Image 1 (tube, helix red, strand yellow):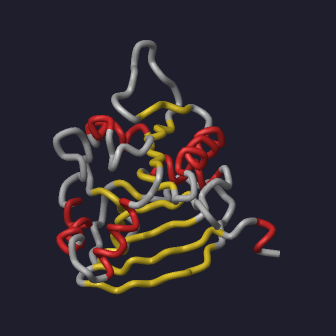
Image 2: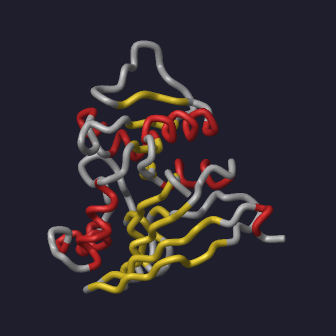
Image 3: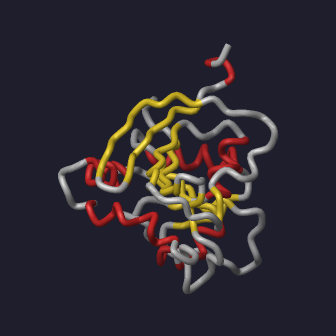
Length: 194
């Protein structure tokens, strides 16, 4: 697969990507920052550094609207000026996103635009809502889950609203580092599960 759409997400062992009460000023929820301690090693030559460099080598970003807003719209630049496609249900008149960001209301069109913009590089996905929408639409190719050795107990879950169909995954890479296991899964397409 030349330019996969790939989710990058830190998650607790019990499935949370943010602690309770995530909101502006407390974007990761109470105690949610714990999920990102592995980023202390992002400049290392170890697995966390490798994964971080791979994430920043992506050619486009798909974000959910909630994530985009909580991140302060990244001031229009997530990394290196790559296009940011914000998957949203609606766009208010006059709401123009900054910099390299644009709103898209159709999940398949969002995936198509992001793949085209990324060229031969992967597309990074941020946010539970965007991830779930892309999975339901059959547009997610891979998931890089940074599994953190903690049970948060409450907060925002990554896979709460996928619907009744199960989704088969293949583990294609596992990297162990201090306080985190980086797991890359390939999403099986229906023709792959027969």
